[in-house]
Length: 188
Ligand SMILES: [Zn+2]
Image 1 (cartoon, rainbow, N blue to C red):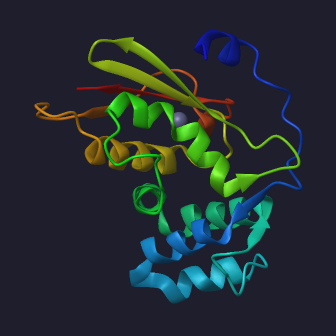
Image 2 (image 1 turned 60 degrees about the vertical axis):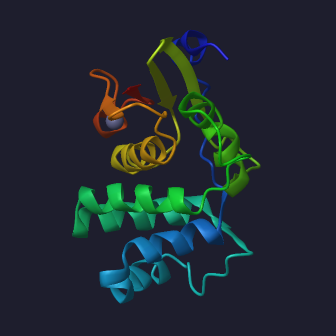
């Protein structure tokens, strides 16, 4: 999939009132906030997300609203740790994927725990060099959540022989600034 067309002409965002997120994803949030789990539970419950069953589906809109409250009250670093935690629950097609394959499969992984009807957003992978790639997303989650998710993914699928994998938010478009997309550059 080419990046350019997706970014230059993002699909019309329609209110995703019927988009759903899996209970398993929400349970990961509670786990990521284990030190303040009762507080997190209260915030989710106040958005109608209680009880949470890993086998059920919940309104994405409610989850997003709850996440915004969590970010406001507890801070963006919590969103980053939630993103990292979410990756622990992600099942990739193989444990032996290359970093590029893992980054490229993020979109299909996202589709396992989010479903329509309605536009749910996507992850677009682009190789930018022998040891670099970038991922652009227009999902409605917080920028920091995806940053944590990509950092954890990069650690899990670090190429053999690579000393480090760096994840950097590309300057410019950012959802925090009201733009539709964030792009993360990954290099190793
Ligand atoms: Zn951003």
